[in-house]
Length: 494
Ligand SMILES: Cc1cc2nc3c(=O)[nH]c(=O)nc-3n(C[C@H](O)[C@H](O)[C@H](O)COP(=O)(O)OP(=O)(O)OC[C@H]3O[C@@H](n4cnc5c(N)ncnc54)[C@H](O)[C@@H]3O)c2cc1C
Image 1 (tube, protein in one colour):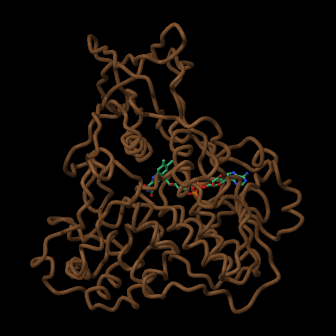
Image 2 (image 1 turned 90 degrees about the vertical axis):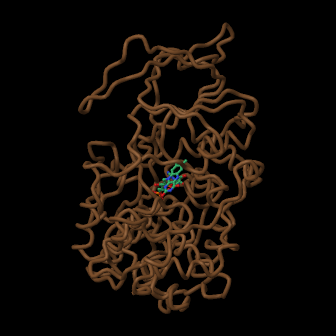
Image 3 (image 1 turned 90 degrees about the horizontal axis):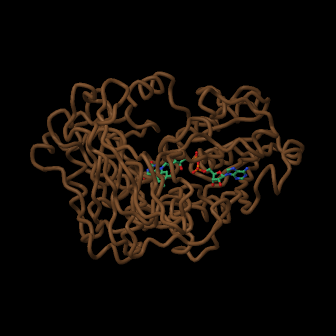
């Protein structure tokens, strides 16, 4: 464990951020980890090494959190990196952008601020890169089996990494012009610099994984070609169909899906061509009155991006009620605390509204958006009613729809394959087997689970790889697997 009583000596502390006014001028990451120095060791010492480490179960990957905290406290960074990388292929991603369900279930969190697990994770992996610990480890033996992974988001990448390590020949097909899925074109650079993805891709390539970009399977590459040439296929196509808002005036100019705004912006920041399927003109928020509809991560990323463009004003509307600041009886520890979250993008400037319903998009004679008509609503049980007399008009010339995603894209590849879907339109493939309705075809990540988190995508990719490996290897796999009991705990806790 960390230092006995360490949590009594040290308060929870995180590195400072570059001030909002300064960081809005660029797209670089802005957490000042270098200035934090040895304080990270004191933070690791706050871990109590609990007999039942709830954090370990709160993490979808089952990361051995108390063990790596203890190693950091003892300044044994090599050990810390080995422990962390035993369960997580991409701590450089989760250490930056994970909402850290582990911290929500940290036992210290019962009556003290939780251990800064996510930041410790980032420091471990960055230490490892700086000190040459992250090296390509190609498999010592190759099987004669070939696997096609379709989709290069965190789920596809994790499945590919694990299957490659088991000795299979893995090819990753990506329809976009660069590898990474939402890590590349969804999550903005100020949260995750793209050289971090490229740094890892170099290692994966050196380990023997083949990456093929601009190859839309079902369009540029026929599925029959893959069925003929690969022994197994993994569908990791993400949850890409956005939820629309079919209110009056929806056809006004100036209303866009969040991903069109974010992906075109990210392409520009990265100096790349706008990737498929987000082709179209760059959407500029400069001097515009911007309204973001949707209160989640995607909405928040739109706010951070619109601020960097120099928007005249930014408002965010959420249909759900304002969450409480503290845990309440509906979210007791160790459950994930759905409390009010102020992201770094909110800090940079934005007016927030809750329990607001958009009734109409108002346009001028030319068809350009000029305002939004809203009404306040009151929630009772699972339904809401409009509050009479609360109708308002909000000036707007750019609206970004960030209300989540329905399911993976059916049209094209999946419909051609005739794969079965579940009731929500995700690819049907039970947790545990990840096997779709089609023999030898598996699925993982948002395509199977529905819109979720990077940490879940990695976890699904790893678990799916075990099933694929067993399929290719007469029911046997030596790949690491989360124990069933742990899976059950994770499902109960999140
Ligand atoms: C704007 C935004 C911000 C987010 N921020 C966070 C965050 O801060 N933290 C967090 O944990 N999660 C966040 N998420 C969620 C997270 O990004 C996803 O849960 C995760 O990326 C899912 O991974 P995936 O591999 O399943 O799918 P994706 O990352 O969506 O990747 C799927 C890939 O499949 C490709 N593809 C689809 N069909 C084909 C085909 N036929 N042929 C070839 N390629 C194909 C797509 O082009 C895409 O690259 C965010 C999501 C969005 C939209």
